[in-house]
Amino acid sequence: MSRPLPSSRSTTGSNLNSFRKNLSIIRDPTDIYLDGLPRRWEAEQPNFRYTPVLSEPRPEDGWGGRTGWVHEAVAADYPDLSGHEVYMSGPPPMIRAAKPAFAARGLPEERLYYDSFEFAPR
Image (cartoon, rainbow, N blue to C red):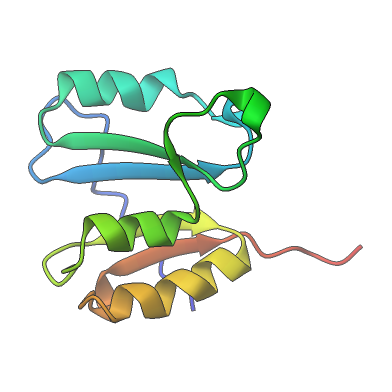
């Protein structure tokens, strides 16, 4: 069951009180949504890091950044998630894959917030 994202937290404020890392996953670098915005936050906020992750870059994309699945990038960067909160959104398979991977790294269930993009039948 998805827990709603707390509305009292903001990554757009001028003072981030804790470390934030934004990872996004897509297939094509031209599909990165508002890429400049998290890059600006990273430049302005010392506790914010942005890491775009492409799942299937093509050679012609010339992508030099992270590749693979976003939950695997999080797990590689944070082998101990016990002191973190994770906010994620994406398709059901991504959510299903991430939940046990994060739990295995110590993330308490009550600190995982997500929005699973469930698809409605036509």
